[in-house]
Structures are given as structure tokens and as C-alpha cells.
Length: 178
Image 1 (tube, rainbow, N blue to C red):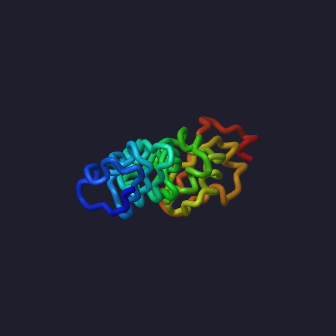
Image 2 (image 1 turned 45 degrees about the horizontal axis):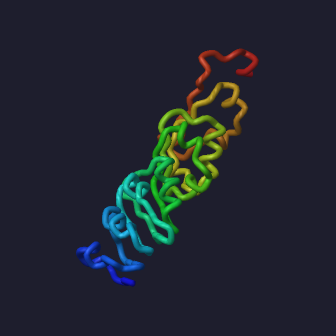
Image 3 (image 1 turned 60 degrees about the horizontal axis):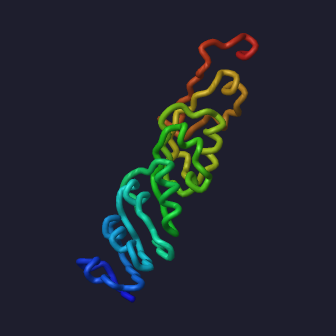
């Protein structure tokens, strides 16, 4: 068994150990080196969202905290949540992908940025997520009928770029407009 902190050539220091516990912070590359062969417990692992989502854990391996240095896509966020006890990240993806995100993925995000049009239904899901209104950015786009039927609260989106509303219907009948 090896218990220690991050200080130098990790692979050589733990060669042949049956279990490894590392406190402190490691890069994704250092973590992956340790996650091959022994039961490994790691403190904090830092890297890009893609690197952290790609970490391969063996049976019995665990990571306490993942800290991504880049925004995560929905798929990367879901993968990171399955690899560590604690993960917080900025989520940035298309409206199509965000619409498929679980509440767990949305609620773990410190901010959410959606590219592409967001319907009122998806906007309601995003508003229910843990990220604050100021940290949730998207352009609301829906049919005239849906926008006219929406409550003012559903149409008000924070400040500046957070309150763009676009009507996607090319024409609006007199019945819908009144």
C-alpha cells in the first residue's frame, strides 16, 4: 500500500503497490497513470473537460473531486459525474444536446450556455436548474402562439444577452395575434 502526496515521479513511486491513496492535486495524465492496475483513491484531478471525461477508472478506484479547466459538453459532464464524488463545471453545448441532459448534469453546472434556439419548454427546464439566471445564457425562440401564451416571467431572462426572444413563425394569423 502506498499513501502519499503528489511529489515527483508517481509511476516509479507506486510500482507494485496493491492500493494507492493520493492527496492533493493531480493532472489528468498523472491520474490516468495511477488508475491502471491498483485500487486507487485520488484527491483532486484537474484537466480539460475532455481529459477528465476520458479518465478510465478500474473496479474500486475513486476520485474525490474533478476540476475541469474548460467548459464541458453534455456528454463530457455526464461522464465526469460518473467518475468523481464532486464535480462542478461550466456547461456549453447546443440546444439539441442540452435538451437531452439529465437534471443531474444541469444542476451540477455553475453556468449554462446554450447555442442555437431554445424553446419555451427547454427554457423552463434551464430555469429550474441550479445555475443562476445570470449564469444561464440562451436565445429564446418559439412560435408566436407559444410566446403569446407564455407568462411574462417565462419571457424575462435576466439582463442583456439573457433576454433575447425570437418568434420563429414566419406569419401570425389575426386569431393568434389577438
